[in-house]
Image (cartoon, rainbow over the protein chains, first blue to last red):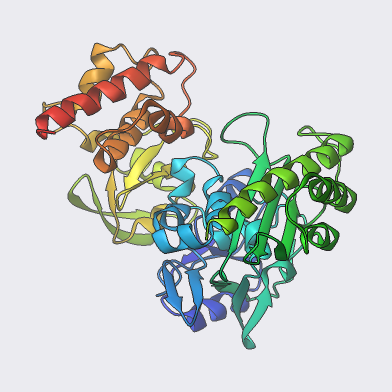
Length: 289
Length: 161
């Protein structure tokens, strides 16, 4: 990397100029837990690295107008330590907390996990399930996009040259609404999801599901919003026929590959099982509110 | 390529250095500052041998650029003991023989110190999860966990709790 440059701008506009103005590949840096590995292996050969962490607001969580606003570069430890967010959206915090070790948690961010664009990204399904949006800055100003609009395939995003995620907006839960995220790995820690599943449900006063979002990870080129699985929940209590319908719908939504972590058949089976288990947790949490 | 000038604090002392854009904090510690306690194991954030504390949080120094240390406060294994007085975690690693080849030890010491800075009374499960990002191929981990829990007991006694 003879021509690599490093800059750490302190405003969004300056960062956009640096990212957009680079002739070659320019990469925004937040936690660096993917980028530095890619840099070292030679898989990524950027000309410019633009550290976003000196921009005010890029690290931190604030609550405004009924939403949580999470800075793009906020590390995992700060999400887990944030009591209001952990209480409001335990599934989002669980998903982020599953990424890597305590050391990785000290650096790894939601925007990095999203924009690295792995189908197995653990923090993404629960954000999508909560209808989270992200604010994106770029040469043409700012725009807002749903989180599910960012990843277009493994390692690919819809972000244009010079664009980067500034912050996430997550609406606060309604009464009797909660979420859960589960992933399956063949060990207890430090692994990449074979399947991930987020379930976000809103119950009525009688424990019947009024609204739901089910999002699967690692079973297709991108995260999948599984509308059929949500339909299986809406209008029902979480009894066995509902669970069976959810399980089947989740399995049908999968479009996985066979790799060293699991076969197609295995992933489809596990997606249904995780959907059942995550739904159970989400219903219990929502019912307790 | 122009080097970046960095002013930072390492083990309580103000430090200035010049680094290349792609140099990691680990490269800088070992190659520019001769702080060779932090080890390079995997260079991908899996093994934890390069663990340092940055502004109170443990990070893999192989996954942080040297230039990012500007204005931060970094603690390496060289800053854990107070002069000749070992930190309780270090003392208990010796007493429990919680090391064999020693390569992973600096990372474990730093990570364990950070745990006990936050929580003087961790459970065994909390301790094992906290140290899950540090790999040891010699000890089988059990002696390390015993040493950390014993150090916690010593520190609680010292703190009068």
